Length: 437
Ligand SMILES: [Zn+2]
Image 1: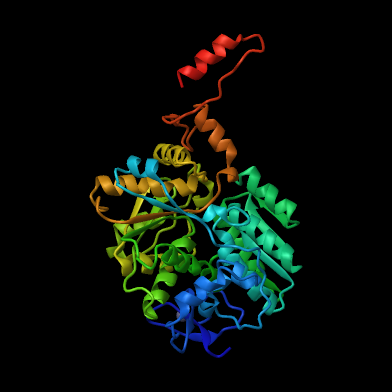
Image 2: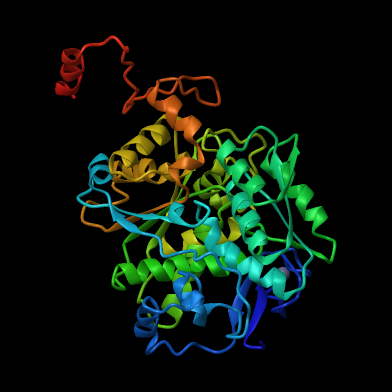
């Protein structure tokens, strides 16, 4: 399809490559790649078409990614690999809003995807491309969610799948998913960044296809979340979009999605894209604070209980920086205590998420305090993973047994520990317990 091509995002390079060139970074300068389009898209009837597809039984229309396929670099004939991803809810969350001292707060729950995390929206596009290229083996480095997602999509497409994870640092639930979907799981002594370096070497082999978020097809699939969100808000763009920051694929994808929508006139402005990092794993926040220096310094030993964002060398930082800079957003950090409390507050809205997702609500609370977010502005926070992704964390918090990475105790300020009931306890006692709730 000559209409689409890959392009280096480095301003002083801009090299162009064929859409199907098996590249992950620019072969001239090592910069990240975007997928671009030569001709503009006629968007006149797209809103109606996308809405109509919601009632269709075609698997492409049932997917919240492929429903927007006019903006994806594939043809109508492409055989897609889909698990019916996307179509995730946008929740009004009054308790979380109160906690942030806002009149209203919406949560876009990407944990409601088929494997329980936001990764599925990008993985459907990347694995579709892997099959189109005739790959034998798909690989990724992962803190858990990418592993679960890739394993599932590889299984759907009959591709071999290998995953490299940091040993002992991935939640059991995520590991269990990858094993159940039949992936070969390789546990490495080291952190995520060690795994990422290894996987880059493995991907030198022609028959291997790398699907970490450095892969521009991942970002293309994932950008459709911006489309879905805009549609859910009846094409009224929120003032702020707040996402957790680990490997920074999320902020990159939202940036690309909203940019595409503005370019074709479907929306007239982008939301301010703000990234929240855990204090102990915050190289992007540090870069943001002193970006005048123009150098990005990796975090050698990232530390946080929010394992999904425990990343010190985020591969997509340049794309994320572009999104934050272009939209006038910001990057802030939150503490382990703030993450844990915000997670429990989100839970009280009846919405479960994994710890990394809760950085958003914790960060919004800070930004409201600092008057960066004003009370009359509209805010959407993106939850990235399901509560069942890390139940050990949840149980420890509610039992007041959670200990931070530096050994400090995290207080269960919103704790809700189980009440022990003896077999011999009489009915009156139980009724008394329930009365005081
Ligand atoms: Zn380049």
